[in-house]
Length: 464
Image: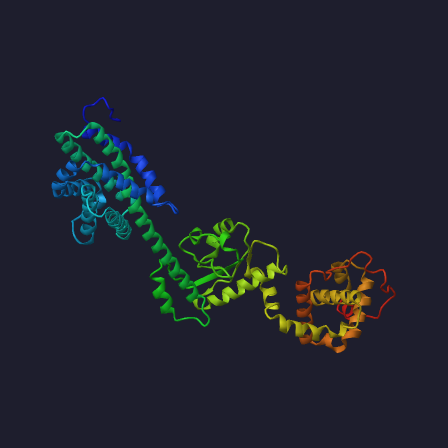
């Protein structure tokens, strides 16, 4: 219940209720103070306002009781907050007792260097917040402890103030300013807690990125080095894993590493971002959802020592998709495109092979060359008869006979050599991948200027 000015003096119960009603405001204020970019000057002014509002004679009386008051505050905090119900020893005692003493003594000691007092007070509660995080306690426990302490202090201050005849208006003013003081203590401590949490998270992410780099090293690093670092990152080293290559995005469009979960090692900062995961299928739904349009390629699942090979394959797949060689899909699996990856693994050597294998067609016009090589590829792939090739190319069987006769004249004995046929098929398949404009079957009027007279019996006829 909100105390009114009709009372002669504010009772400790009434103001205690007022403090309890302020619980929500305290929590929200602390959250605002802990948020990035929140100014801390507000808290310093709140502390100054409380210190300056306490009448000197009340400060003197309260300072004499500070030892007993500190003991009472600590006792009630330990009784009210389970996380603090432990022996007063070590760092726990140092921080709890020191923080309570700092909060109380500064209230009742407004003499001397006020700026220095503000500096010490701020540093003390920032440090307390950091220790809270390091010892595994929550911000809720911290805020509850501050509120409990504030109630104890107010109960004693209001009782002493009434015996001294401190005006009711002054006591109400002190109650209001204690609210702001509680806000600030929470805000400063939570800022320290959040800073420690951020530093710890940043350190963990840095270790996980370093672990990812070790795993992807070429040549591979010793397994024990990976195991040692993994032990500090909460990441279980699997026997087999896959690497997922991602399209690069500017820093402003990067996803936080946390969206992929703790089972995934993440590098989103480099020019070639990637993920390392033991079971890509288990993470595929989340991957598709979180990438939001960014293309990804899933490398083969390989032993730990061959992770760099999975990465190389995934990056090659991603590059070929970006060039339009592989399908325009948001998530590609290397395992679905192995033949293309093998064919295009070394494009320099492929170009040398292609020039040699298709040299007999070099003097033809582009249209003639496309017709004959398309027919040759159909023959190499099907090894079928005239009618089967004609159906595949959607041309007349006589056209196939005519073309195959031309091909035999151009290639001579090479068409009977298995090694030469293999080279020609590799060259023609690669050309189809790299040049989507090469026709796979006839276009309109494709036969208009071809001979339709009977041709000599060709290889395709002989294989019928």
